[in-house]
Image 1 (cartoon, rainbow, N blue to C red):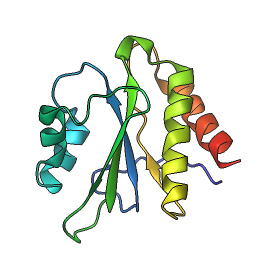
Image 2 (image 1 turned 120 degrees about the vertical axis):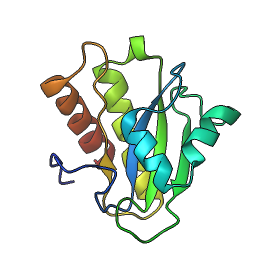
Image 3 (image 1 turned 90 degrees about the vertical axis):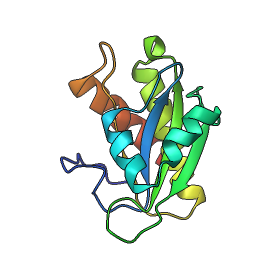
Length: 138
């Protein structure tokens, strides 16, 4: 498993699978998700409004892009639970679920979006994401 940081905008980065964290109890879409939602025809917002995507730990929802204008072919939202419980362990589990989702679909690569929340940011966030990715691919 090759892990490398991405500094490009995930909303326009070409990837077979872009994985986003979904937080339980959070209202509305974060800026990246809102940009992706425009490209996906509003399905992320509808999933939130309908209650199909609640952000509970382990829950997930997969969405496909309708056009061929670059950017992610699929967007997978993975529930990470409540923001106050978002720590290194939660990020490792989230990254692991992302890798397993890509593997079960026969995808050779994915883009994992790491969301800074609370005190978890920077090196600690990236380290937890890399650890979860590598351990799940083992």
